[in-house]
Length: 253
Image 1 (spheres, helix red, strand yellow):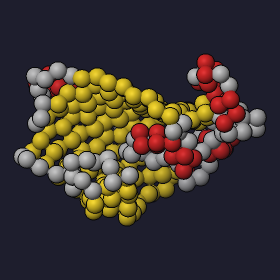
Image 2 (cartoon, rainbow, N blue to C red; image 1 turned 45 degrees about the horizontal axis):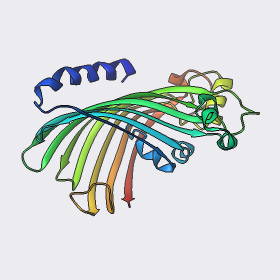
Image 3 (cartoon, rainbow, N blue to C red; image 1 turned 180 degrees about the vertical axis):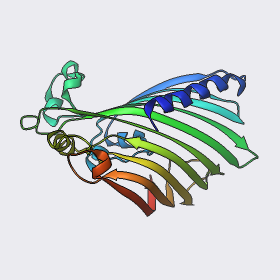
């Protein structure tokens, strides 16, 4: 699924939203420091371990509308991490984008509708791009830029279990020249990939009215598609079939 395709789906959602509810749309934003920024990285695509460990600052802009039985939500998210040496600089210089070793920005649009008292059907589309640079900018000073997009349809039941299925596409190393792929790989990018993803989650412990605190989840993740397997060369030649099924255990405190 391309970025333009996701943008088109988002436009359809926006066109449908006036009929969802008469209640006004609400806007709010938040900005935070700390490693909790990894929670804002879209789960529709894969992230490397260095990506998940990187976030230092997160900023989220939200516009949503909720009438109790249906609603929609728009999000603009920016997550970035700084070169450790740059944190000693004045604040005005830290905000300079040249000090970021990891920066991702994405836009997401979602619409949901209640089905009875306990079930909810939710559609989400996301598209964005990520720039990365190695910690040692003297050796590899160049930044790399890749894009990603995804969409999924989810069925949620009473905050106790959910099932989702969707498609994704993300850039990364693979499908370029050997030198370019080596730079993307050294900057901590995951391999280029695309395909379908299905997930199932069930809550084992936690307050049903609070999805964020003290919860333990178990689930299954399945992916089917293609994934880059080597540096350099055409992606069609270096990619291989990627079929995975994994058990997930997650906790939030």
